[in-house]
Image (cartoon, rainbow, N blue to C red; front, side, top):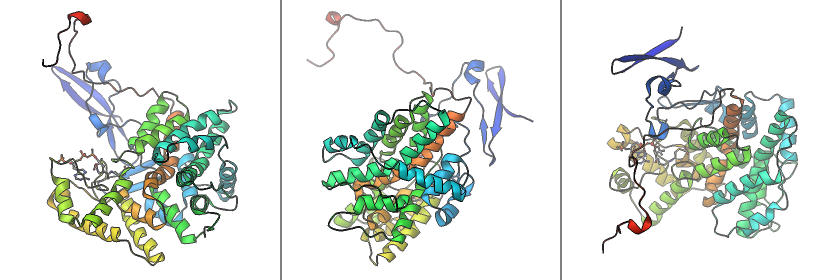
Length: 433
Ligand code: CMC
């Protein structure tokens, strides 16, 4: 039986249907609200707005739960690999052995980047941020690999595999180019993660030694980033896609959104913040006080989340990984000590407690990346490679939705009412004489 809520406006009562998700989350269906009442809803930042029905990722921010296609993130981080998780997200089910083998063959087949694209890389100014380069290059893929106009499903599958495979080649290429080093090509004998590390770090004078534990750490890092339901970049991918824009352009827009310091750019911001703490000997107390000061725009990078009002489950795994990776290299990182001290201090502070501000995935991720040799300006690119399967899955799901309409929010207009046009010669000067 359909549940309804009643909305009373003046003398009129309207019945609005309630829809319920598989985990019991309820939403008031306002599809006919404006048509019936003349009213719209007002929800800047969309904190109370469900923009779609989705079967990809489940999050419960109060209980710190994250599941991809129903499987808990802790299990996937422990048992699975990034390649398998990418398949799971995009196709909806875990692959059989045969399917994963086929997927690996396709990822290998599509791993090269068109040689003409190298000219683009070469012509970016040396100081360009890798996220700007990545976003441009992903968009440029559309010109190099236009749709085939064959069987639509096959066409989509090829485009998806092409993107998943080429993104790591392009990321590694941009790093090599930025250093003025020779580009390293993908190798057919290496796994997805090992291949990326080799393309990043192999040089003619120092061959890169692939270490199983480092490969594993990278795989877990990417598994943790693979999807996060309707976050800003995924919502952007869906938004752009709603205009039926091609997939490359949708993903390029997702990369641009992720770049922001409130989203994926936070992993770079955290390391820069921790670095400044170490260099300038700033105390945890000072930093926390600064973050609480409403007259100061500073926020503690890597803390807080729109959905999680408890510890981010990804941050818990990432923190453990920091210790494991540093132990493997038998080294320490002063930034990890500062991060742990900062966390301890913040979690005892009344403001942080009452605002439910906990470390998010970005708080410890940079320390893992530093340990495996990734330079700071590539951190958000690492996030982007990890998030790609999620963006693709979100895009695919929206395209398969028979009720998909172009995204077009409304607004509450607060500008001038109808105003007279004054010819230029009759306008008064607005500036002080
Ligand atoms: N430091 C200090 N205060 C904070 C912080 C922080 N990191 N985050 C939120 N607050 C306060 C904020 O000032 C506000 O206080 P009040 O209600 O007294 O005005 C309250 O907490 C709610 O903040 P909000 O900005 O309304 O929350 P939001 O859901 O719009 O923003 C956020 C979420 C992640 C953008 C925000 O917590 C933030 O800016 N964090 C730092 C950047 C960061 O780490 N981003 C990575 C997010 S996780 C990975 C990803 O999604 O990419």
